[in-house]
Length: 185
Ligand SMILES: [Zn+2]
Image (cartoon, rainbow, N blue to C red; front, top):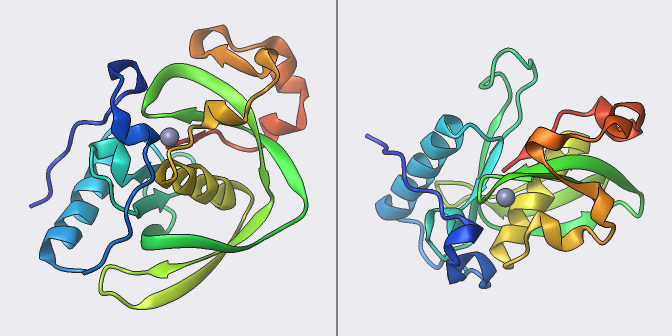
């Protein structure tokens, strides 16, 4: 049985969020247990992605689940990727709204590649590639950043593009970024 793990917050000053996570050397039952716990923790939060450092484990593991139907959080495909790597990315970038389960209460607009190709291993240790675009690509970029100690706020240089979640700016609804659902991971 999987269990929900505590999510590490930036406000707790936990260094694991700022460290480069280590490559997984061996896929064994304890790693599969980590994946199951991360999946449950992400769903309970709720969020659309989670990286192992967010549950205080400094390993290169992410989970992502973007709903296809906004009324059903589990309507999309669930990805668990061990040692994920972006091997190709679109030159084209797009701004979209993000929040983070480790930075509660803040949202912002982040510029990301429109599509990426991610290479990694599944829970059985099989290598695979995913070509993701738009929303799913944004989730992967947010989560892979976590493995490198990077937070979404690091990408925001224009202070007005970062706001408190309960003070959502009016201009946002007029912008193109409002067309896509928000990434919280
Ligand atoms: Zn995050």
